[in-house]
Image (cartoon, rainbow, N blue to C red; front, side, top):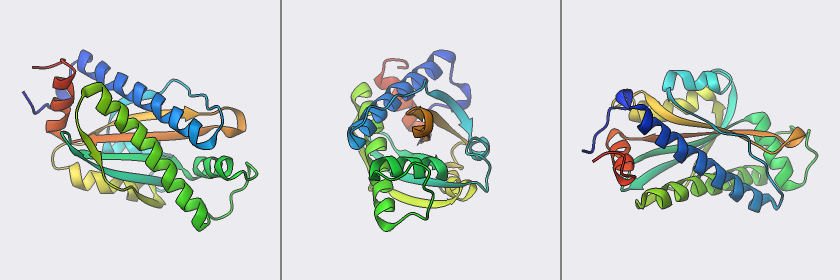
Length: 207
């Protein structure tokens, strides 16, 4: 059994995918903490299977400006992974990393953009590494592509690529830090249909 229709996943299969999301987000938080050399607390991640058309609402609306980091995923599973932050959270993250005043919202400098790209690379890498460890599957990611644009425009990339095989993605919403340092991040994992089956089979959930 390889192909799985995501619309017919049962509760056990959904719970497994959600638990993978929890563990991946936890490891990503640890990676972020090491990068900024500061303890980072993480709220309980919200993990859901969401339709593409719902994702822009989660990100504050289709016209809301966000920062998106996209990686293609290859190996024994195929798909895309995105890490998306609202611009305010992206500024907070860069300010913490670069030692700036927290309420600084000037235009990103080239150094800021490089830092954001590296943050996205490390966080998504930590997530995919934990997924690989849990499933014993070889997962290879591409170099990250970063864009600052409206949520609707950024989400159109995976929607066009994967819309022909499904209209849903695994959404993991995570809250890092506390107080003024709080950062809200969204992981969006979009495996192709065959890869959902591969992931669940590797965990012994399906045959």
